[in-house]
Image 1: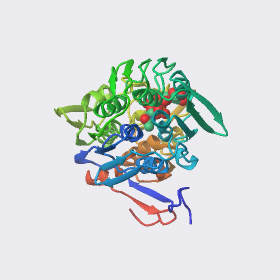
Image 2: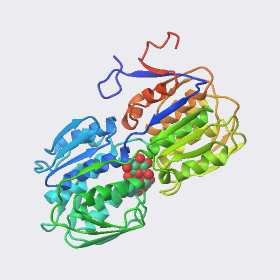
Image 3: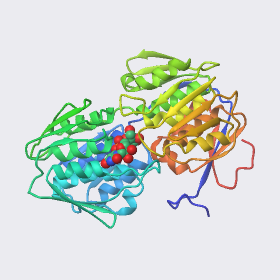
Image 4: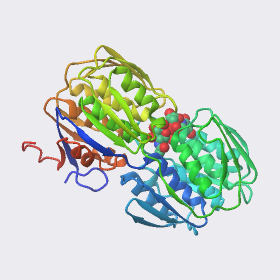
Length: 436
Ligand code: UD1
């Protein structure tokens, strides 16, 4: 039997094209907040409750990682109760961190709580080399000795507690900002992190840590200041809505020339996506402080997109917008500056009739009048969403493989799309001959 590498039978997602969507779609809690906040729960020598947790494979992987270090976790409808009173292990197994880069983020909390952490170099989507040098340099500045041996990053606190430090990040890495902010919450004295990532998920993590009693200010700006405390206390915390999921549905409305409403959202987190949709000709209406209506248009203009750290255009939305630009008039460009290998969906979109030329990290997209359904392969999480969107707009049927990518980060994408009127479903690979 064909499997997806995780011992589940391999499936294909069949998507009927020329879909028209209507209705309302509920947005789940943010994947990237949840994963960092689950890691941060390790900082608390008590139990914490996290609500609005999305039902995605990456959360299950993070649960396994926390269990592997001896943490007790109870799952109940969208909530996690994490009891981190006792951490029995400082070592995280390779086969878990290999599945997801965010698994590496436990290094900061483990080191802060235990004075030692041994975490394998991470995996995740194959969108670039994704080193962890910024995490490592920052931990060293906080007073850790770090050795990388046989693919395992081993960090040892030189003193009984980490020591506050001034840290400058060469690049505003989301993960490094989060790792170092978490480690510094329990360090002795003040830590100042300069050139931080300003992503909303970093702010959500800081709010969670503050709810546990951490002293953090400046999250969401370029400078975060943390005054270390000796212990953190219990809390009950709700995750923010997923801005990438929300923006994916906004593009779904636009690419199918449909009108849908989306909530809950934090519109400020969607500024770049809204600006680009409006620039090419879609209408985005703020119906309330947490609800948007997106109205597609019969025709779209071209535009130019460059991915940047927040508040710039998110790299996690690049593939989905590229799908939309394949059907926009004229020549658009998409420049990927955050990851060095995040344009693998170009070849798959071209299989569906898109006209895209690659010039280094720039995709030049010449709009075509229609896409046609084709067998395609999901190459990473957001690329898989882009192919679903393209499939919804195309003539005929698209059959997508590589669904484990989609399952990592979208909470019931197919069910949500079906509830909006789309026709798509999974079948075991090899049984896709019947009519859709
Ligand atoms: C996080 C998000 C991911 C998003 C990305 C950028 C999570 C779980 N994932 O990933 O969805 O696409 O932010 O918004 O939150 N880099 C280094 N050295 C380091 C760390 C990073 O060179 O030590 C480089 C990376 O290779 C990459 C760039 O910095 O080219 C951005 O990476 P980073 O912001 O760290 O992304 P992640 O935290 O991995």
